[in-house]
Amino acid sequence: MALSENKQKMLRGELYHAFTPELVAERSRCRHACSRYNNAGDVPRRKLTSLLREIMCDETPLSPEATTSEEDDKLFEDDPWIEPPVAMDYGYNVKIGKNVFINFHAVFLDTCTITVGSRTLVGPNVSFYSATHPLDPLTRNGTQGPELGKEIHIGEDCWIGGNVVILPGVNIGRGSAVGAGSVVTKSVPEFTVVAGNPARIIRKIETAMDVDAGPETK
Image (cartoon, rainbow, N blue to C red):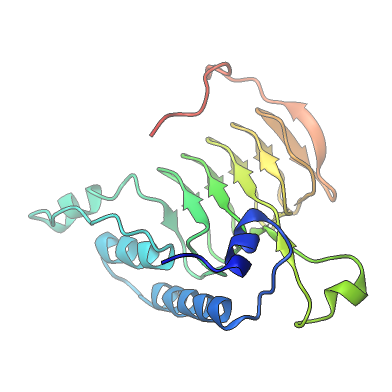
């Protein structure tokens, strides 16, 4: 089905209206999917993976069930692990790599694409804000006015401390670390430690990793 012009503007990071029936319904779908995930309780890894894919509108089929529960859990060991509760606006704009761990109370305002690279670790209460608003209050106009967004990209092998806020348009380079409680307003180079509000470069990271290698291909 063709996307509406308003939704296309949202995905492109242009001014759009969030309170149209189409987008209100999509946020409602995601909210209910998050509720099912957050209230799943002590269920097998297969079930959690299925519920998470439902949030993110990921239609990848689950692997056939293994003979034992231990073997079955291993089938999903590369899938991202997100501790509930988690909140997302749309879900389908969140893209998470392999072996990612995201601790509880993560918030994804995924007006635009938010990516988290493989093997990245995220502490509790981290917020990814791809959504933003016009500064002019006359244009902003509460729920009647337009808003917009900018993509957020977190590289592979990053470490994001607890209570971090990542603002629209930020890219965090591969292998970097963000100190707890930081507000990241600008993009972060690869293999760099940043901290503070606003986050500033603290030092470079020394590593035996091949820093010249590009991101893994999937």
